[in-house]
Amino acid sequence: MSFEKHIPVLLLEAVDALAVKPGGRYVDGTLGRAGHTREILVRGGSVLGIDRDDQALREVEELKSRGDEKWSRLTLARGNHGDLKEIACEKGWTEVDGILLDLGVSSPQLDEAGRGFSFLRDGPLDMRMDRSRGVTAADLVNNESAERLEEIFREWGEEPQARRIARAIVAERKEHSFTTTMELADYLERILGRRGAHHPATRVFQALRMEVNDEMGELERALEGGFRLLRKGGRFAVITFESLTDRVVKRSFAAHVGRMVSLQQGGERWEGDLPRAKAISRKAIVAGAEETALNPRSRSAKLRVIEMEEEDYGKKP
Image 1: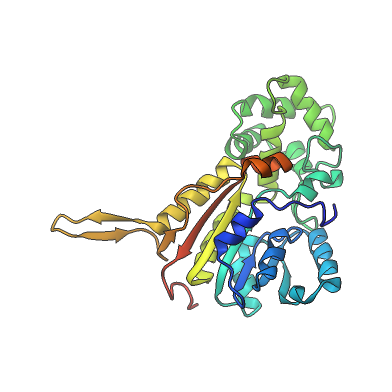
Image 2: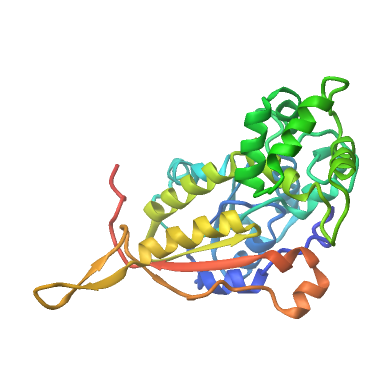
């Protein structure tokens, strides 16, 4: 997919939320095709762009090499957003003015059949964002026990028929292994039937992708590391696409915003997790009608933003 065709979700809303200032330092922990990063650079910020996808990094490196002056303010790093604090410190970025995470699978990854993320395009049952290591979705489907598959489908896909699906897959793989996305998608449609607008493979594919890439673990580490990396007044913006990840972000941000509680002896006291933060938007920011019409994938996107109020929390080793 070309950069011209790539449509970053909630582009202006996310970058506006970061309150980008010229000379400021910002971490894009899920760089992708640099859609959000480009806008940060246009506004005068410097960006540390992190991604585990080697193809995305190659494309951005090519764009950087033939781009204008603003791209000189982009530093690229291969890695997981869960390690963003460690990666930033290795690059000499010991504190930053903003962090952006655009979670989930990117449009180019969905559109390329060879990556194995989509049940609408036939390709190898892979789903790894970093194709250099780790187990594939095929490894899980063909080797895990029915109990473990049920747990994955229920926990990460919130699939109500997790047990039935897991047992059916284990029975079916005795006859032949699942190697492609369409093999698995067609089998799920055959055993579950097709009702409503959503393909019956939707939740299972989401669960497998999240398990393969440890998405929940990476998110929790990214949030903890980000809180320690942001300077006072720095902002943390996260875009989610699934209810699971949105709940994690919502709970984490709310814990750092905290609350005032009344004391028995009079007065009140703040309670919450350090570093203390303030909410920039009480409710999640969602895409408007114009964006959802142009980019249907933005319909499920939610943007949450907080601003750090603590000055020196976690800055020392």
